[in-house]
Amino acid sequence: MSTPIDSAAPTLAPSSPTIPNHETASLGNDQSKDSLVKIAPYPFDNVYSDADVVLQTADGTRFYLHKAVLRIASAFFADMFSLPQPLSPDSPVAGRAEIPTIPVTEDSETFERLLYTCYRVDRPETSSIEAHTLAHVLSAALKYQMPIGTAMMSKSLSSRIHMTPLDVFAVAYQLNLEDMVEEAVCEFTRWQSGHKAASRGSKPTAEKPRRAHPLDEYSVGMDALPAGVYYRLLQHHAARTLESLRSSTEAAVRRIVSRPRDTEKARGTEMAIGRLPHPFYDTAHADTVIRSSDNAVFYMNRSLLSFASPVLAKSLSVSSTTTGSGAPESAPASPTFVATHRFPEDGRTLSKLFQLSYPMPDPELTETGFADTRLKDALSVLAAAKKYEVARAVAFAKRACVEAAGASPVRLYLLATQYNWDDVAKYAAMRSVYETSDAYYPEMESASAVAYRRLLVYCRKCRDVILRGGDAAQETGTPVVHSAYWSQSSWLRRPGEAKFWLAFHERLSRCVDYDSEGEPYVYMDVEAFLPSVDRAARASSGPPHSPDVRSPSPAGCFNRQNLKEIAEGLAKVRVLV
Image (tube, rainbow, N blue to C red; front, side):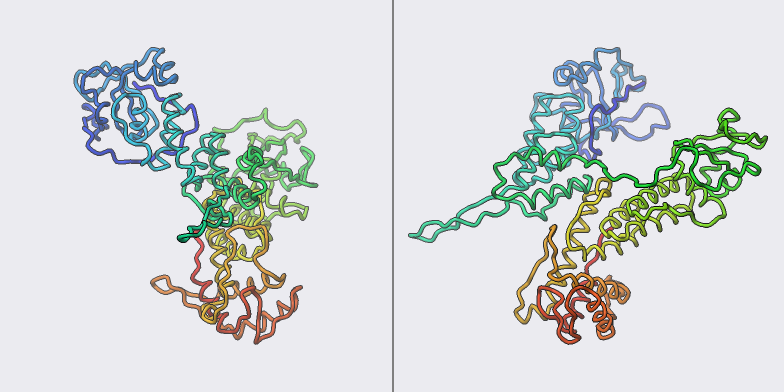
């Protein structure tokens, strides 16, 4: 029998390293355990036969250790070993049957590096350890309450701040190391000044202060963090000036790592309990009563729900019901009510879900016109539809989400990446290019930083194609203009430009194909597009564009050849979803 060790502190996902030169031993005579167990290398292989405990990692490597050493190094193990320990009946090596075996959740590479902080033997250099491996070891040291190991790994991690502050920020954020988070933020937003090299006989001249780390610097360690944290970090980087360097960053760091409170209220959507409008009051044909979390009552036909959802078919079976006593007092007496069920969803959500499970028209999400309220309702229906596997409801909720978030393409993109709606994500990303500033959306708290990073990179590439004006513009000596990676200022000069280029890009998306090697082929007729652009320009607040001379961008005037080259350039930019 073995005693598992539960995670007592937040841990990172273990890696799957290959441990070279480890001895192996078979797992006794149990035919179900015909795989081989690895034995850790020296000094964890019990070469002197004096080990009194075995810790087995998640990938099957056994470490033969000494309780006395672990007690001194770890308060966690000191408490564990103060209790009676079970014995292992199937030790892999003869003569070791009395050694207890305890499984741990870490992989062998992480655990081996952690144990080197406890045993006084030659220790490998931590400076060459990759950041994600160092993070796993530090997480384990915190979990097992090893002060020396924690100090060593923290020091090694802190030494990397100047080179890779975002790597350190990501690890410190995940492990709640507040001081290290602040150091990493200060380094990422730091200004630096220097001196130009002087020629012989002259004095060095001072350089203009510049950022130590550019705004678009990124680390794969940030991938799993919320997009909202990354957004606030970029916002702080962009806002921090030389004048603000002396001010404390403590408040800024708290704002970066904390999730803003949801101050949005559902205006006019609250319903009195028991008075929720829905069509499920037919007591004559119902055989099941369902109560929502807010005590809305639904009289349902089990056969219709079972046909729409295999999950509901199972959960509404007679063996899993609560009979009789769960019926509401106000319900009309009827012998057909044989069961009452309680569902964790609220009444509004269940009302839409059940309407989509019955053969009846699609429901209205909400009577109000507020997009935020409609989106919240759509997301609630989507969660329930996926949970109960109601296919029609899933399709309905997806359409409702797209409609409700359509006015905010960035918001729609973040939702689409979370639910793997690749087609919606690509369309929303294209529209996001023509947003005039980078704004915050609540969906950033549940979306990943890597998804937001991909969107920012895609938008910048598309904007750069437009601002360049095509290769011909560069050949004529037109200065190359680059868009910002992230900014709360518009990348365009006139209001009509975003409308112009969005119409151009949407037309292009319908006029491009790809060959077998993935190279785009554009068959867009610019000549046919120009008249429609003129009408769009005249309808906008910007000045009308001449069909022959256009200046929709700060890069200068564009002719038809420039537009063709811009179309080809935009077709080459792909968004990763």
